[in-house]
Image (cartoon, rainbow, N blue to C red; front, side, top):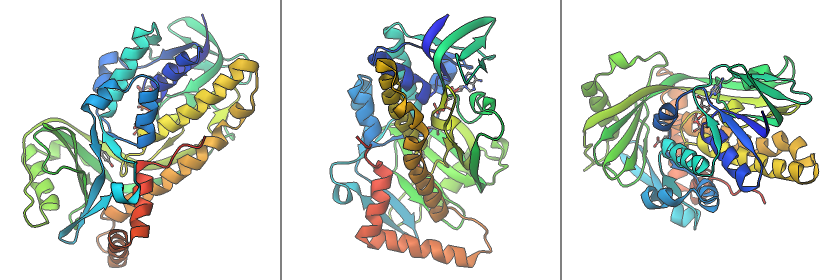
Length: 387
Ligand code: APR
Ligand code: PHB
């Protein structure tokens, strides 16, 4: 078998890449370890930047997103007994976010690829990458797939990044002393916009998926186990951390999904080696505060698509050679933003009174200075893509 681009992983990165390449007349095969049902149901973050929405609409996969996505023009920062709105319409006019689950994006992309005759193979758990320097190929299930290039879109735990020889990559990492317990609940949101709450008990986030489904997160210890978090404890903790402003009551409902997400910042540089290009979580991850993960994957894939289109049009490799360098500017901006939002809102060492004072000082600054609020807003809605 032969294809132009062999893609490992059917997350948002791999699927969008396959879709955008198809629109440019470039062939690809996507190899995914999990089942279709699994990837379509995997609950992840749900905040799309303006540029992500624009990319999906412009490439013809934005119909359901435009119908069902919730357009938000602000977020609330809640701390010290008060809520403070970061008003996108005033601070970054014309830019907003859309709340739409990541797995809905995945469903829409799979449907579009299959409708166009795309080749996505699920439940392939033995992909191996060969000959990265020249004439690369993939093997799986006793078959061989020759490719011009390989795209490693297989997430943080995938196999493509580890196939790069030792000594090539430099990695940068930060661990956080907590995790997020996330739930999806059958209950109308208690707020029209997302609430990021700093609380002595730990951070809490109120998000949503639809007028009848809410999404919540609680800062928990890094080794938290779901068994220690029965429904009553989750709701009581959410109420304790969110019901801190007069007149706000948290509505509760049936919990329909739950999970614990570790928090980590990670970047591997360069995001390429030989004929292998890494995109999305395979190359970098951010803590979910600020919801940049999916949006960064989309940004990488846009750059890779343009570079591959130039390469397959006339053999020019300049953009491909510069792929990592082009992506990393945005990657590091999002790394900083996600680290900063995390640092601003979570409870670290409870003995660190000085750190707590710094947090309060910065929160006060962000909620009273238009310049500081604009910094948050323009990063949150996402910086524009370069031309
Ligand atoms: N072979 C084939 N597929 C694999 C392998 C493998 N060895 N290892 C992992 N995969 C698949 C995973 O099952 C998953 O479907 O690669 C896919 C990677 O998808 P994501 O983890 O969703 O990563 P990405 O597409 O880069 O999207 C980034 O995902 O983790 C979130 O917060 C992150 O929202 C961001 C987004
Ligand atoms: C979500 O809705 O899942 C979500 C929203 C905002 C975040 C992270 C996750 O910062």
